[in-house]
Image (cartoon, rainbow, N blue to C red; front, side):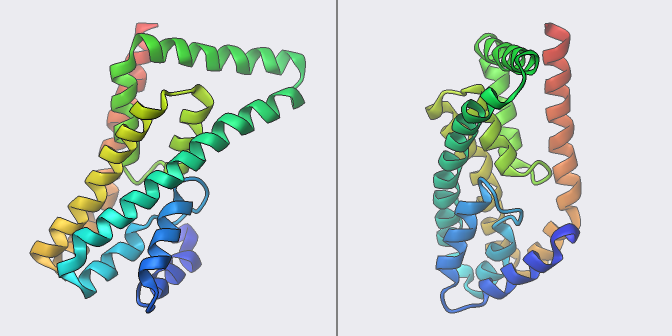
Amino acid sequence: MRLFGTLYARALVWARAPRAVYYLCALSFVEAFIFPVMPEVMLAPMMLGKRHRAFFYANISLLFSLLGALVGYALGHWAYEAVKPLFSVHMQEIVTTWVENLRTDMNQHWLAMLGALVLAALQPVIPMKFVTWAAGIVGVPILPFMACIAIGRGKRVWLLALLIRLFGERAERMLHRHIEWIGWLALAVLGLLLAWWLWSR
């Protein structure tokens, strides 16, 4: 977040605004395919302000994240098809081969691919927009894609809601203190899955 300090501060201002729920919906939606600031930045102070509505805010954020994920998926698919003719013939062959190999591996190791999607949606290190665009480019089946995003992102917002309901401000401080370790752990698991995939080829 240090790279996006201004946007981070703006999101905190939105969280305290009278129309905060609408801003949360918009932030959750655009973060899934383009915006660099995670909705948790708004969720935490909103949940602390009204702890009895923590799960309501979590569910609203999740719903609009899923809608945004559909947009990211579509952009990944159509942008790839639109940009491909601009490449040289040699580059088109390389990119097409790479994407086709990913599609083949996805069909052969679909369980590992779905697990990787869940982990990618769960951790905060890889922005969600990369996940949604990549899924659209490779052509992950839409229903499993949405299910994985729902599980991964749902665990994040529901965990935040549960911790704040139970521990209040102490939970927010704890989450901020350990979020980097949580993210790097999830990234390490993703790396192991990638290494397994490369080794099995």
